[in-house]
Image (cartoon, rainbow, N blue to C red; front, side, top):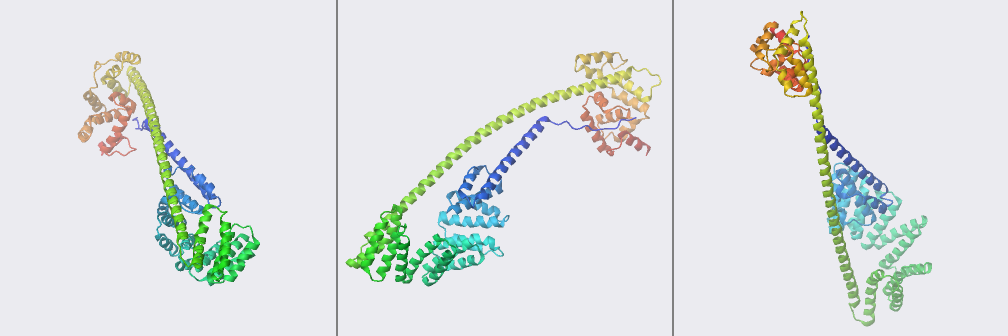
Length: 560
């Protein structure tokens, strides 16, 4: 029977396997690191609104330069800017909020609106860019944007316009907020902004109506601090609207209810201004003296802020007394403000320089750590490559030894068959004996003169042979094939000799004689893997189907 062709599993290079494991491990470590970063950001986000300081401390665990996943970077920069905004203002470190805005633009509408809003506020806060208001307006006017998402940019727009005293353009924004955001605490805030808007627009009657409404809500809700704040604001609104008597009455009420409160100097100041506007100059001077006396015990910053109002009033009173206008007090105010501005700019410059120095030191340390890490990785990789090479060499030697053992087993089988003396041997067995005498097995064995092969040589030498250790005489083998199989080789060579190589013809001839793949590899001096490759080539050249026997196909071809 002819042996069917089987294909062994290809030999795997252990070095490639080790490198694959290393790459997989690196990916796993990277994924694990990203998962840890995602968990930290998630923990900070959960408490950001209620405990912004704690959330910021959690975020400080992450080194921003180590964020390699785009989604995590966008989430990190957005969350940090949101926390800073919650604390009062954005910082120079929030410059990358624009990255979040670009990332979320077409991915997450909620975060896209928040990051775009904060990006506009950053441009205003850091660069003084008033176009931020225009950017916020464009966000609040996006078509079909849900109210829940509109509130955030709308609130920021109203807040900053209130600080800039942008009255008329801001009023519709505040009223829109009041109509869509029903949160009670926010309603108080929006109405307070609306009061300021009306007050600085000169519409004092409207501002007083809103203040009375806020005071009534604070009383009904028992919010004493809010009540005090709104009533104090009302005192100034009454003064601005010309209701001087009511202003004085409310000021006395404050002094009576809270004689030890910390804003007595401002209450006396309002009384002095009201009395001055009522042409009661002497009383105005006495009330202003009380205000100056109370302010003397306050902090320097508070005293400077107070003086920015009291000096102006003193200047007016001096003019009424002397008929002369002196700017010395105003110069004091301006000098203080100028000095404060210079100190603020200096401190800001120092803070920026300090931040740059810290960032430079961090980058230097990071570069040093990266360099050490790179060296360590190179050393580890070199050790792995060397170990892998040694392992590959050992496995290669072992594979060669296994192949040699298999060849020896084939040798032994051939020798045993050749020594068999059955007189009624079949044609194939006779051929196998003849082939053994024609093959150059002696030379192949002699090329590796081990003790085992020397024993094999002694056994082979006992076989009658006229080859005397020469290589296979394939012409003689082909003649035997033609004799035993009715001209099989001649027909093969005639039909396909122009496309088949000598090696391929030899393999076909040995297959026809019943030799196994391992035996063919020994006889032809090739590896088993090479024999499989050549068989595949033969199939392609002759058009033999994958599962059909090559020799059977050729014999069928002869019959056709």
